[in-house]
Length: 545
Image 1 (cartoon, rainbow, N blue to C red):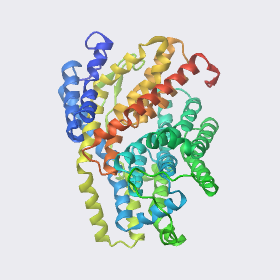
Image 2 (cartoon, one colour):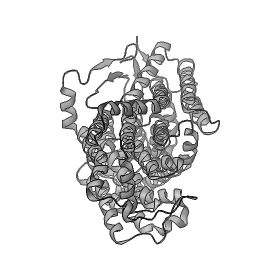
Image 3 (cartoon, one colour):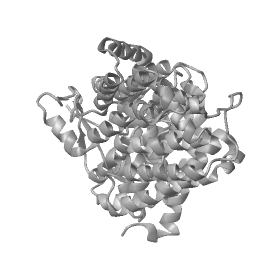
């Protein structure tokens, strides 16, 4: 027996949207203001979402519970699998003492914390985002920054802020490719449009990142580095997205940005070395300068990580791994698969919502990270028994965080299958001539709810297209804006906050991280809205025809 979603169960779309937002308010409110532990806040939000779905939206109880179970499973795999194994790689590097060598090589290149956050939090993080996505760059970069000596809250918050500009083209262009599949619009046009929006913010974000950490005067002292990091990311981002498609945008742009930063630092350094308050000045000496062989050995885990993660993200390799017998079993979720019907205007005609859980254990990014940890450990001469000990230690560290991620994804899937998230989207779409401003805000909401730009595009992509056509706007603009605006929601989605908390040892302090990044996220999303308004009404020539 099927069930059709009703997006205005209370008879008014705005009132329905307000009720639909209650689970999100409970989740974020208890985290940010009541200092509730993340897994408790997630469970409270989940219970609220189930009540709203069943009582207000009339979703059958069995379907609602299976939607939550499906989300919890997805939270553990592949998201939790990535987090667990990313932290395992870091623990191996720290446990073998090699991360100390990594710290010295970075400090000798740039002892200034502002330069380090640009190199790791922005440029290197963009490379990992382009290769893997799904929380991997936040986990890796936050762990690296904490290992370099950053304060835990700063390491978490700055990693989240830095992981914005590349998200729309993350995981080898998956969000844009998925957006094209959902909307039926040409992928090359959507890629080009996103590439005519995000480069402006790719230039801004490095300045914003350093400003958030060191204040305006601290940022002004290193403006050449901010400009080089951002500009040499933005230019390739524009060129590749407009002339080569979405798949390699972040990979190429990040490599150019890293190379440009390295070249700059060969002949320019800040006049004053900025450190955190109370932190002793670091003076690089010959005793702390590792030799070439030692540096290569220390960086081996991160080089292996980059190579394997990139390989695992390549579609031909992923397809080959999935083709191995038993490597990617898939199950239709009982009492849910094809039983929930999406309705207009979210879709042109009633459409069954699939619910298939694929356990692609071999091709999952987390498996590439697990192999990285094992290969790196053996390369660093860690005994197999000790390597198992490292893994068990990591598992103990992240056990509550895995529960949190499972509960948060269960909440997200419940709102998706009940249609309550679509109610919030329709409320945005009802803003008329102001819709170009709210179009990226809709993407921002989608990522904040689902934790993924790809999922946000699946959720709201068609709504963006329908709303644009009704208002006489170009759907290429609004659909691309969903992806561009969504990147600013990445820093506040609960999944990313939990990942950052795990990586920096701040389990139980996720509310502090949320408060650190929330206003950055909202203001940047609003700025995307302003840009889209200008592109819609003042500079329509920027839209691919």
